[in-house]
Image (cartoon, rainbow, N blue to C red; front, side, top):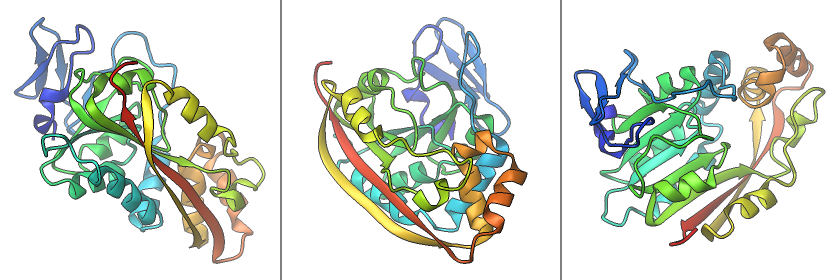
Length: 283
């Protein structure tokens, strides 16, 4: 619910704090933002974003796949990484960028009693789901590559699970001692599935680029590898193929065609690295 996190939000036009009044977010300068009936607020202003958010079909596929428990070991590893570094005053304030369905953020809030969270995404179908993912979550439509509509220095955790990392904004919104928790695929992640024709491949230099992007602003303080084998039927394979980057490039018919000839169950490797980066005092 937005009223649980309004004090963490900032006006995207003037950066002042926001108050919630009768379904409208207001700042002292008079800028106002209506809360949608689904419970989220759009703080995306100015020129249209250059980035395409996940479609309703991609978000629905992800919700079905995650709710079946296939990525629960990863969800638990992310929640555990956050719980091991709680907010300095005992009440964590968490932001997830590219939050998707809100499932990871909800797990983190459950692991941190009294915590509150903001789920940020550029996809309207995503923020509609985030808004109902947890009673202590506020859903915000915004672009991760612009200045975030979050007040400076107010967060204890920022999460990035298969999502972009904006190092400068992460550093700005985290309080001293706050952490960025990143879940990123290894080159082995979904290797059996992405080997199919037309599927988007995992960038083998992703981990190297992550370290370079965060160097100087953050110090890596923990790392955990999560790897196991999924045994998936064709409907689950279709959901997995359609919920990621390939969903932007291949039609639903082509995805169904790709998995139709695979044996059941079909083994797929899940391989993800969860890293924790502590905010340095200077950037």
